[in-house]
Length: 290
Length: 262
Image 1: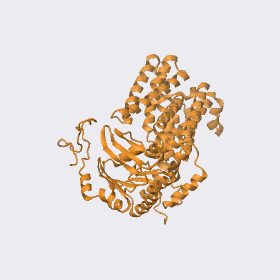
Image 2: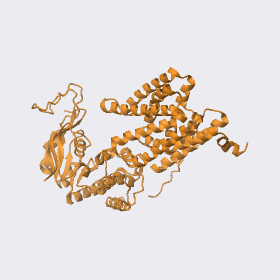
Image 3: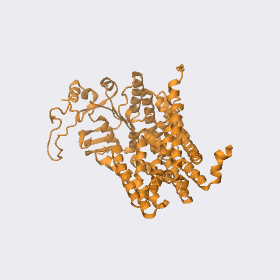
Image 4: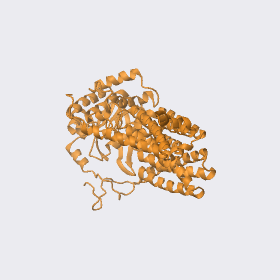
């Protein structure tokens, strides 16, 4: 087996592999930066909760028209937004903090979603919805992912400064602008559409992995926000490629393979990153004179 | 002439007042220190003036300028210092009113930032990440942002908390300079000596206003003692405030064990 067979042939010979790679790579372009902001806003677990929250919507779409893309995507988007807004409202008008109300809503959503799928579908369908079918991405799905990523990148570019201000110095932002709350909601909507984009390929439960793991790994290497976003995208792309390759050669499930590669990069970054465990503990005890 | 009129203002959280029936005004071009024990409503008052907190009662009237003309310096603790931003990012937020949320920061803005950083003794710090700054350096950077905002009204929330003497002296000079330029400055402070030396006006707050006027008359030992005696804890048993009836506050005694500071 030569290098071509090992690294390129799967993607050249099989259309489903090419589309899988294209889908995951395109998705990486926006999932990376969105994940970085989620992490910096200390909302990693919120992302996880939102990933569960889109399930009942996707399941409702599945009930109506089977494993078709558009109904499931729209359903997931609607359900995600409803949960995001509801948990925000609950934390605002009751004593419950937002993380608690998110946890409550996502548990309800997960149970509801699984029950809805099981009403009509088999366990295989359930596995598809929960863990995705990256190898079954068709052209419609790719167009959908492309549209989602385009919208996300434009929105991120426009919201960049308010988002940075809202993370860095929220009280100051309130003194110069009323944008804080709308920006927060728009950002949650961005998280939801990226999760919905990812769930075709990776399933509702793993979609958040392509967001959080590369962002968390990037933080061990670079300091600036821009570099973090760029590196998160790169890690995401590499994970997609290597994950699909592993999945092809070892005949293992593709979604989990992608996320496991991202997980491996995270662990290596944590250990050996320039800001990771080893380098901060083994750094020679020299220091500059000033 | 008054720049900010406080009209029977009550501010608070979850129905509990943190600032209670405050009346008075900040004159245009005045330099006022707001003093009082922890939990006395000083920071709450600033948030009320800048419009981040809706009053439970009464109102704040801004005369001759809008809420967006206020430069607000938050407590250092409210800034996420682990966020991967550089000093220039922090300062650039000061251009919000001029450049809005979307338009680019220009070359002339960068020169202005450089000048502001030089003014607070942080020349060459533009590209430093904020997690590498000391508390004093971060406070200087926040003052530089106020310079960049170039606002007629300046609110400073505990600008000197945990800052060394040298920094306090430098930044107090800057505040005095703003006062000289005719800007209205209100600062939340804890150091009575500093206030007596550099702040002509004082508002002594203990949820209820204790004294408000010239520092020499407001900041007496007697007034300070009265401020310290204020009840710090919220009283969950406190009767709801009836706007029509006459009442006296600050005399609700806590049931045993509720932990009020008497």
